[in-house]
Length: 189
Image (tube, rainbow, N blue to C red; front, side):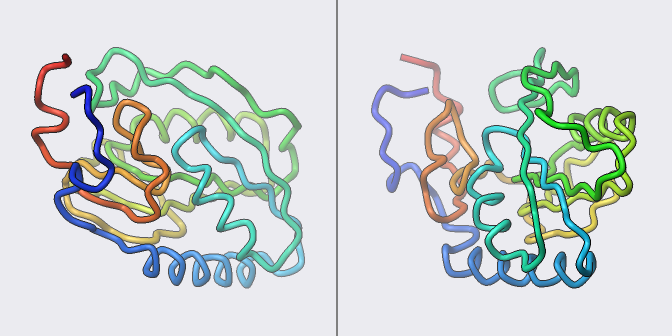
């Protein structure tokens, strides 16, 4: 990663604007609320990337929700690739047995990490287990994942913003943008 990070200049194009995200989150929240009726829902966010999405989504869901957080690490790949080999760094803080659970993801790429997470969470015996993702990148899918709620289907480009990062930066952008290739392909200084 280069020493100088320029949040604006490092973006090649805005793929999903702040306004488009806000409209889609409102739509997803309404659909999720309608699908669950008056039953409480537990949202599970996978740290760190999905935090902005979950924060906005939970406020858009018109039924009682509780939240929980997990942190997983996919190791063995490069800085821009997931290996699918998963370690759980932070597990749920409460039981989800008998609960309606919605996994909230920022992006589904290969599906390897999420596939592991689905198997893991099913073992905790939730009443139901669904998935909501802001971004879906099906061109890179290696595992078929049943996604219940999709915000945007995007092309196979390296994206950052609205929680998505490169080297822990760019998460604070209010939009999803395509990172210029020279930013992540140049050797570290």
